[in-house]
Length: 212
Picture 1: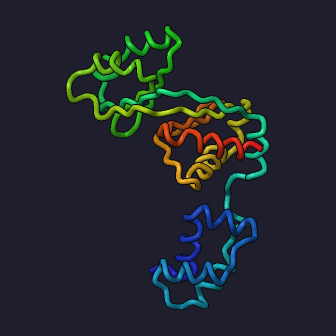
Picture 2: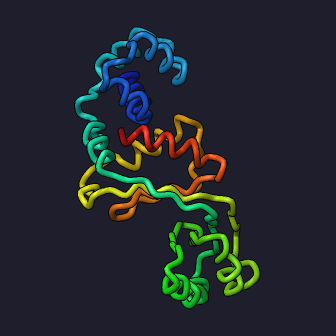
Picture 3: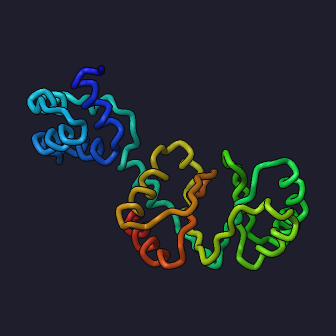
């Protein structure tokens, strides 16, 4: 069985909110030790407290919040409404069937994004394009269609690719307000969130505050 010190280190390291608080120097060691003791079921409080105080936060590799905020100040927010997601099964046949309609949508300068995941492919389009996509597929190839969604994009300078933590920072800000992220991706200069329509106003407020 791992030592108490190891258990405590693993517990803290696996919780970014705690490590961030430790980095900022705003953690009460005694309160943290009580929490860790309870969560891990360890009765030796003094040993847990000592491990919390010795946690090597300076060795934790993470993003620098000041660098992320500097990048966000150079970014802009764009929104799209009436967005839909179509989740389809995995398979070469599915992708072949989608080829023509994807090309058509792109030629028409309409939104069309394909994201391959372990269990299939997620297609992001505007709601009006959903029938055009689903008609190309066989029965049983469509897993789910999500409608009444919005897309919020933070577009940053190209140097964002060398700035770790922007997606994590914004995702954390949204989560702290109870906003569920339906889909999220970070590609080139864009950090994209797909959200429920009712979360749009709150999300824009959160992201705007994050860019100040």
